[in-house]
Image (cartoon, rainbow, N blue to C red; front, top):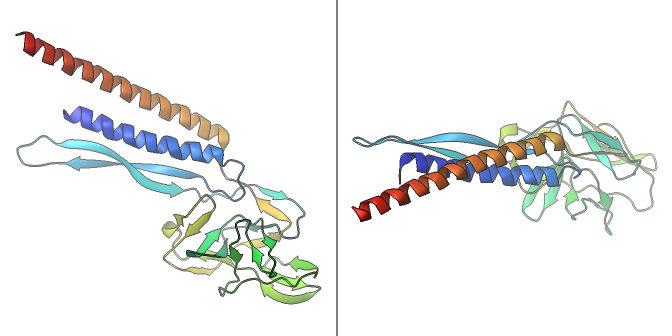
Length: 237
């Protein structure tokens, strides 16, 4: 197989990977706290003495947009949004996680949890407990008051290394670098943060990727026909 075919096949694989990511972004354009994902293309070069250099495309590095989504006022007592760079701290079965999706609710034990059941933690890593039947108010620093008495604080944290964030699922992230208290953000009660996906730009990108993929496929089809014709000519002669 010629180097041009290898290069095109690797590019096709990368474009297909990007197409899946763009499609997932579009599907989550209305998901609370979703952060848009992208893919980084890189070049892999294989070189050896007395052999031609082979250049291939790789698209295995994913990056996440850290732009804030639009804040929507809901008036819900257990809806929260972070205005700034912070994240809510969660306890999951796989360990601690971070999220920007603040559509929480109290469970049967009085713990504040996500819609999936993950417990919300304070900055020290302890579950946030809400006294049943109490009037809950949350200050901008995350301090929780029940009937006017402070009872806890919602964790508002930032990863020590923002580039260490790894997506666990659509709205949760993990980091191996640890977290610090957020200093330049505030917690808003009665608000939620929407997705930061721009659907128009993502649809436009999907069209671009599809056209690039079709162009590569057209080249591979022509190359396949050229090889078939060459083989037929050799057999006839």
